[in-house]
Length: 123
Image 1 (cartoon, rainbow, N blue to C red):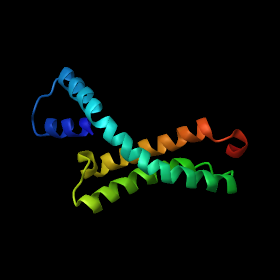
Image 2: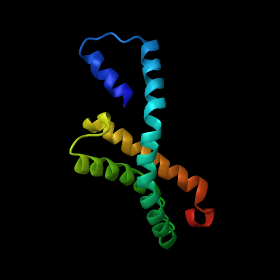
Image 3: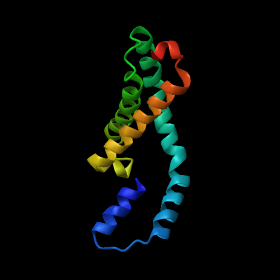
């Protein structure tokens, strides 16, 4: 999110040196991580068990968990937009940033697959 916002400022002509980019990113991580972790957890607590159950029924469909991770993020973003009537996460105003957030969710689903799903189910 931070890098998308900083890039938009650079495109407007503002010079942002690397140390400022790094400091800004660090501060955003410290401030935003707890809230975003809760959002991700809320989505994953629903999506991952459903995908795990489906994976047990269709063991060869390993894409289900990464898809569930992406769907969890996209659903959370949509729900926040719907309920709050605003884009609660600034980066979600840009399609590429939404894609990046969804890909991060897919990576989380893939990581769950690698760490928690029994190998016999992974095939």
